[in-house]
Length: 369
Ligand code: OSB
Ligand code: MG
Image 1 (spheres, rainbow, N blue to C red):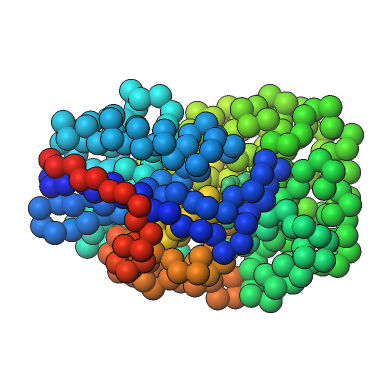
Image 2: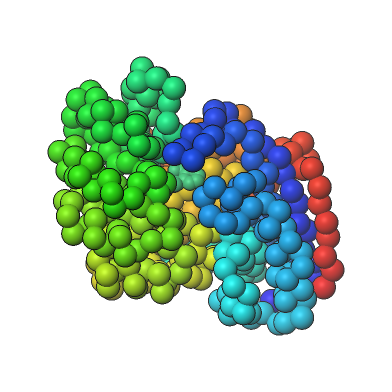
């Protein structure tokens, strides 16, 4: 795959609504878009999902820029790539920095699919023509706001509701929500806000018939999660703790969770996400695709990944209009009745909206090959 040039572009976008987790609120997003061009005029797109501050994992927008400019692009300039899987091998001497790696690798995957005139989903081996999606609702100012937001999301057809919780805003909130929505698929995400000292408190989750509790304990833990899982019925799903197939294997062997949230950025790209998928399929571990408040390019990658068979639970890939007044792709992603139709055009299957890209671009840089 002969590369001609790569453009690294930094966008500034504002979310329609602030998104609040146990760690704080996100409203503004700085997003890197990678454009990887070959000499035939094909272009593959990737998106970096790192946030401006390191609240979710250690990476930030600035660290991913440093990695992409000073380490990752130079590796591509020095090496031939025949398949996107080569990229993660070439990047493997660089420790972690998975979101930066995934952004670059994602552009190469898209380019590879376009050069072969197939969809990204097909390139990954996915077969679903449509995917089921849920919605992740941030911590709301009042109970009324929360009930209203859930009601609206259910009316839009989302297949399951994920609620963010934190100590002091958890069991009573979930109890009230459960009373209002007795048969809705509900799950809760703590973004690592608890410790094992909260175990008696966390046992109360079992009365609420939740699909799962996501990342209750520390972001870097799998041992305490195993202890917790052995004492609660509610399935634990790991998010922050999983950065690789090796992490998945260890968590599975320890019994740290029953469900995996796969995020392309967190695991370092689509190649690793595929390996995780295949392992989970073999071991009958349920998988779903998480979200990072992506713009359209990242959203398109999530859709393609979710077409794989072990993505058996609805993911967090809501439609573009849930996040943005104007997304960066055309057409925008539409979730109708909680279902997204997988695009059938080559690669990610969406074009970039050049007006939106120009409006949001703060800075860009070109690398020649
Ligand atoms: O923990 O899954 C999470 C958003 C940003 C960072 C972490 C998380 C989330 C979400 C929302 O839950 C996912 C989305 O709608 O993109
Ligand atoms: Mg999460």
